[in-house]
Image 1 (cartoon, one colour):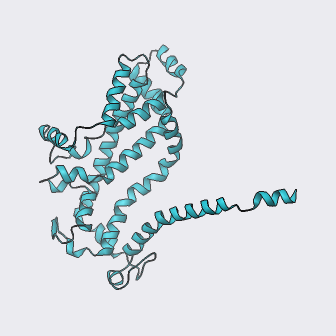
Image 2: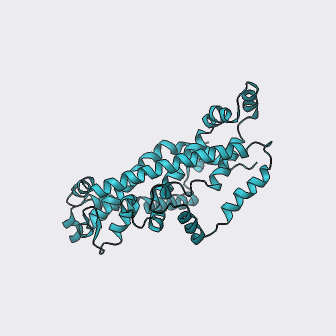
Image 3: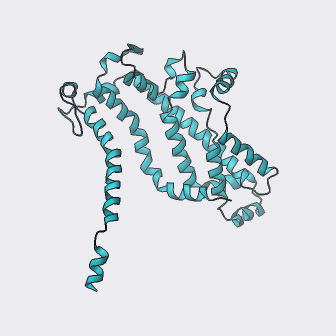
Length: 292
């Protein structure tokens, strides 16, 4: 019996290899964040004299204080917040309605519509036609070009449809027998029972929009006051020799610790939201991925 227990608790070579791989992945993930925090919390002189690695040198919150006093960064932060909130709300509205409709087997031309949805996931018109459409709609240099295009995702609609199809049909049938219409069924039954996939898709959309800098890079030419935080961050981190980007910010004032502090500042909202929705990930993705 003792031998059996010893044999069972003996560390196997495969366990060591798996542990080393996991440790390596954790290090690759955590070390860059620790370096960001350490440099952002170190003084400018300490960063210039000695390359800070994992721990702050000459601890200071000066970089963060400078960021919190910057009107341009504040404005870009709230612009990004508004873009993310608007895009996520529109994304969920379209995805839930489309997923609920396509999950109904009695829907006329259901397979044809699914083929159209799949086609947009596999093929696109390209950047030039996309730019021409946005230009013809008069959305260039507007808030709406940053928040509306791209909010309808074929991938999200398919996940939503598959998740809704896991809901027992008897619930929907009972509601319809009580006189509930499609919108009431969607709002009263489908949405409350689909919170895992809704939370998952919300985070996907929010992270994508929060980190999106390419849309503003292409479509915001004159309205610099609409630049999201990521574009301001890009100007500061990459284009440090281009001078002033407006609104009183001089890029020459941004040393490495200011750049790293701004990156941490841009990460905080997403990192703060993630723990509240990550518990829905497994159930949302698993059930949404089940094929019809």
